[in-house]
Image (cartoon, rainbow, N blue to C red):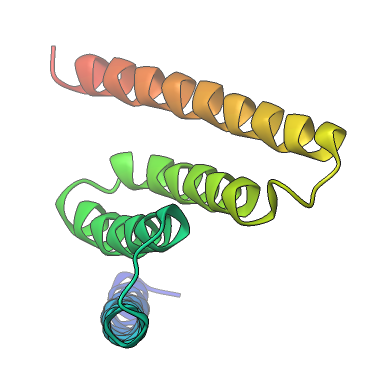
Length: 131
């Protein structure tokens, strides 16, 4: 495979990636509209609804960070997972066995540590690339 074939293939994959990212943002915005509509109908807002909005916001933020600085984009799925676990604890908190709540809380802690370590590594790499 010569250089021009590689460039054509990379351009095609980058275009597919961009189209899929736009679709992800559009689907997320549709989810936000549906959630706002259901909140308006119910005329109540609870913590689980707010956390769901944060999940939507984090997905959009992840796509924005992906375009601005791809190295930092790897931390956003961890934030989304942490928010999703917190939402799960809130939604099922009273009905869950206490040990399951503890397991999920430990999972959030592990994810937080992983995000911290990945952030440190990203900053370290940036410092190495830009002395």
